[in-house]
Image 1 (tube, helix red, strand yellow):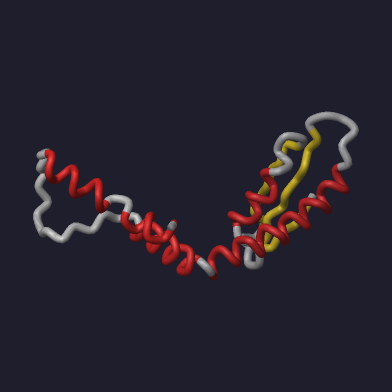
Image 2 (cartoon, rainbow, N blue to C red):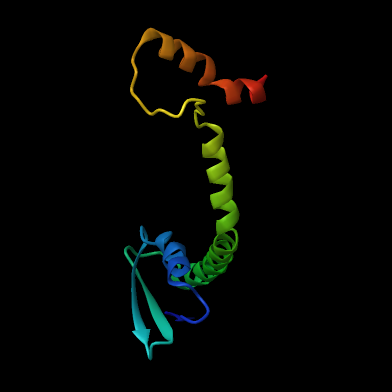
Length: 123
């Protein structure tokens, strides 16, 4: 059984760390005194090293906490990068209309512009 402090470890990090063991163990948890979570491993088959895997799960938990914290701290940067990447693929038009003109001329004009940002960067 593991005792995890909820004030230190985020629920998402705990669940992600424990998920790796769901094939070999039935994992149950209970919340004690609203501060701690008791996690219990029950082997699904004989011959599994529960104590060793519990220690390994603690290492996995530390790793997931670091990943979770890094994800939280860098979320703004990730959103900015994704936004810039998607913006670079947008088709900019010099005309203000949003009509759905299917004439041959508009298709030829779009064909020349649609890959403009890719060709300029990829060449």
